[in-house]
Amino acid sequence: MVALLGGSTIVLAIVLLFVLMFLASAIKIVKEYERAVIFRLGRVVGARGPGIFFIIPIFEKAIVIDLRTQVLDVPVQETITRDNVPVRVNAVVYFRVIDPIKTVTQVKNFIMATSQISQTTLRSVIGQAHLDELLSARDKLNLELQKIIDEATDPWGIKVSTVEIKDVELPSGMQRAMARQAEAERERRARITLAEAERQAAEKLAEAAEIISKHPMALQLRTLQTISDVAGDKSNVIVLPIPMEMLKLFRGFAEIAEIAKEKLKEEARSKEE
Image 1 (cartoon, rainbow, N blue to C red):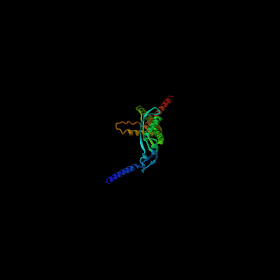
Image 2 (cartoon, one colour; image 1 turned 60 degrees about the horizontal axis):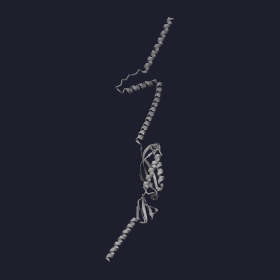
Image 3 (cartoon, rainbow, N blue to C red; image 1 turned 120 degrees about the horizontal axis):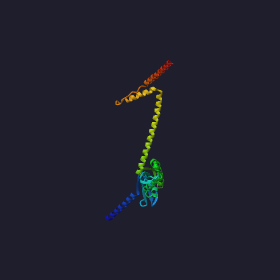
């Protein structure tokens, strides 16, 4: 009797263990950002989640897919631009799964597949662009890369939201040539600015000279202002010029003397006659 009770207890324990294992394999829980693609006898029956759900062990299988945006770092790609300049370019791709059923059934490893299509597309787009576009019109190339990669990954249920070119490495010789070009451009702008400043200064000086010529006292005031500026430095010796009024007075005396001399000559000739 005791042996029978012991044997039934063992059988009951084994059955209970199998029931617990069955329930453990049948109960599935997926997070808010996940979906579970269910296969029943090898056929897709749909995607479930988030939350808790049940599957039939042995007959059904669940593959969990993450729906969050993933960041893919594209390795450095060596290529040649359209104007025959060798460059090294890398990029970053932001994508997420929007159709988990396609992602599971249409591609084996969607992350690897997206990485490979991103690398080949990056080399292709850079090879069709000029170096100036790669350096100055990067936004345009980013949009073109995003469009091409998104179209290629759409059958896999993947949405590529953003593609950004991170870094562009140029040969050292090309870097030196670009530095010389930039220096020459800055020198050209500096000379143009200096020439424009000289032209404007000449115009202002011409206007000032015209105003001073109409008002003689303005020149005298300007002279006094210059003397006041120079007087601040005690090491300088200031030599005052003769005022313009004195020059005019001396010129008047010379003219009077010349007139008197002419009158004396005329009187002397009249006496001789």
